Image (cartoon, rainbow, N blue to C red; front, side, top):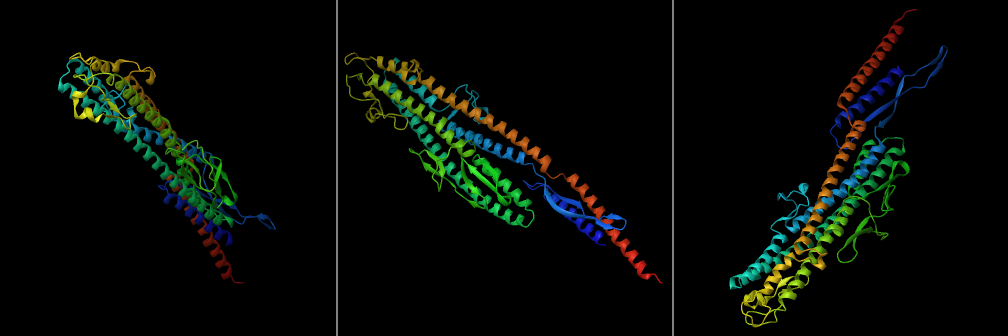
Length: 466
């Protein structure tokens, strides 16, 4: 009877574990479980060792630590390239240019065939075209058109500079948000370590808690590359950038942003104050995009604007108005952020100094020189023309964006492959579970039949008459 009773309990445990698997077939991150059944100890009898049935000894979680580790690492790589792609897409939007010949705005079709659209490239061409028309005919309307084209170009530079500033601010905000999310996950993981240690201290299992912790580890890996190690009582220790952040059941330190100067937000530990250099994750991707391609573009646009200011002013300020007047500079400011057109010229286009002679009536040689700047290689621009320099800047962004998109797509494919592999190991197969359910059900019925049979035999024995 005891043998049959233990068998009933064992098969019921199998039914319960199988039912748990079936119930969680659609639960994200759930790892299937199986009951471990072992034969009971033998009893020595007069005819030899006699079995005592079977016992459910433990509930095993089917996991692959190798695949989990690979998925965590992959999450960091995917997070890095996804954040790079998003940041560079924002930079493209700030330029107001399309990065492919077809004019499509999608970053997935980004290429370096040259900018199109209504951004700086168009305004730059319009500026030189206006001065070319002015060189052909110094009419009042052409003078005003040249001033208007310059104003529009200056405004375009101002807008791009402002947009880049907004993108930079947005990336810093994104970095801070990621830090807050990562710190929250660190706290959750430490709390789960505590719960797991408590549950397993007396020999129990905390399989569902382990699944939850694994999900938190993978989510944390999307923000920053992490190194994990096994602690005591089933806990997991976490190290970021060489600094231990979670040790056993407690959070040893957290992450914070700090201003390294000029609004360059970087990362360090909160308590220790140790500056961190990460190797993956969305936080490092954001930092690299901000201080890499975006900073390069800002510098290039500022250099372009500064060179334009210097070259145009050098020509214009050495000339004369149609009445021999001088003294009015053309552009004000020093870079893309503050370039503007002299207010005196905006109010009175006749003050344009496009004549090389104070006495030569109708001379427009300086207007011609300004228009010809569009075709002249500029030393300050790496011996490129204004348009060529700008196109190279945009092409650089196109290359970076295209590469980030490609890498993000490739990493998504790898992540999907690893997830599929883990699913084949740890995922719930409904057909397999239904088969197991039938096996446990039949075993339970057979055990119940043993109870019935023994009960009948005992009844027959008790009914026997001497």
